[in-house]
Image 1 (cartoon, helix red, strand yellow):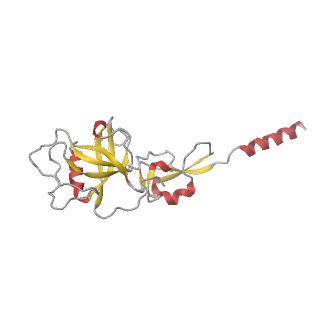
Image 2 (cartoon, helix red, strand yellow):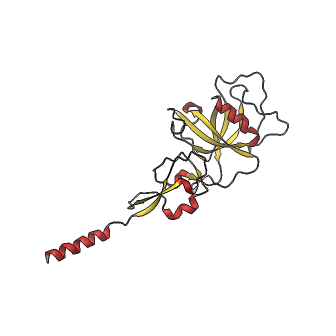
Image 3 (cartoon, one colour):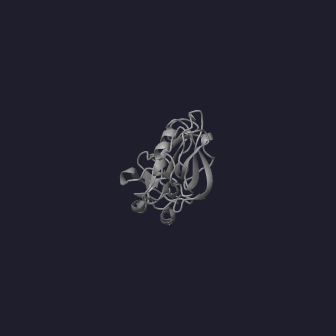
Length: 216
């Protein structure tokens, strides 16, 4: 009787243990803004627990083709908030990467927010170089001169949408430095890239957000 009772109790306890579920994991580093492919994904088998927000294996088809909203580290479980939809770029816009010190961007800046890309720092040469003006949609106004990365400090290069922002030091290896991927007017892409490369660009957040900039 004792043996039978213990066996029955053990079966009841075993029946209450959740069966392992296969979740999606990151196979290798995927930088922010890069499109996720099937080769970027791995599988981890875990017993589900309360509060676990990881994406199950059956969601793999809708993960592939989305962009990484932040740097994805190998071995980590994939969660919905780390992804942004890949809807394709509209005509006339471009994606550019920027490397910024913490004092060159607002604290808490996140994907989907609108910013002004502003020339800053000692790298600016002044020299009377004219900058193209932009209208409310961020496109180049008619009759404007060519954008330049060497204009006076405080000059606005363009309006941009934040696609992703990395944690400080996570992508560049330098403490206190962050990378941000921006969607900018195509005419401004060269100037924004050149200004960022010389450490001569800052971001100023403005009201508004980009429609559809949400996790899948």
